[in-house]
Length: 498
Image (cartoon, rainbow, N blue to C red; front, side, top):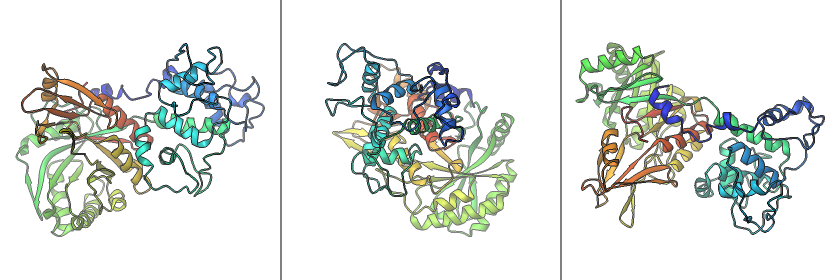
């Protein structure tokens, strides 16, 4: 992984879990007399206890089959997320007023972090936590309340869910909680201690999976880019201008592309020939176009091809599928990356792609998430790669394209908007940093979209939206939750700014 990306991903939410969890319990699950080694949850109980998340009800009994109480789950959440405990003079609930109670600080800490709310005046600490309540508390603790609120309008397979449907749908989509049958979730069913342990270990494993690999796109030979640690780098050097014809882009001379390719390969990354174009380029014979693209890859000494044909109409999308299949056959063992517009939730609809076919033929199907471009009282609302759209796209495709073939495009440049609400252009990392340092610039962060923005007195840039390190960390976490193992940087020379 490159030094730039290592710096960025150091901010990934929950990355401190490995080093900051409470000390392991002295009794692992294998030592509990009520947990047979053959029990389906035995190994996960062992891990949860060893990580210090759970303790036994006694030194020799775990409490297998016993309901998990709401108070006990609040304690476990605090341990899992390593929250700093708070102990206010007065509790937030009518039944949490005794500072000496073993759960008092945990309940107040969970409340402070938004895992529980003040919708009711009592917390009911001794009550069993239901499957619905556990899902809601866990998703809120992760900061996904906004997405879950929107997700309540999405279809779900469970017919017995009446409330908090977005939370339950999200917990299911992320693979944290299964249904009790294909059509039932059993939201009111009490959660046992072993079930809670298994659910938390599922989340733990997802959050502690290997960091996603990186592929970058580079459009200029003049940039001093560091290719170390990248899986692949795509050299923006080709335009498929019409059927069967490729011309070099104006930004990349042939000798510059060759030099970049050599530098990329010397750094241990795969060099890809990045080709874009319009829908008219798809009207020719797919096999002939694939053969020409293969020849360009071979002549340039590339390790593969990155095809990006944006803004295709529905008719052209079937032509794209045919070309990608032809490319798969023509390229053989060489890499094939294909960009496609992601399924959209709130933004522009991008129906018509045969995602299954594209994912089956390409080594990586790179998803470009729909962006918003609207106004609110004259203020441009234009977040880049909105987190809710990332969730929707990955959720829609999780049963269609294997996660190890998906890559998520991350927009590393910034977009500027003028006082009239019109987009004025794209800012590089250097231009953005210069604007951030100017007097009259104020920086903000939208938790709704997980995207940073600034307002500026500069005449040509009233509002600028951009992804910073926190934004990238949130997208990285969501990708890991879905098992997506690669991010694609739209311009690897314009990485997110601190």
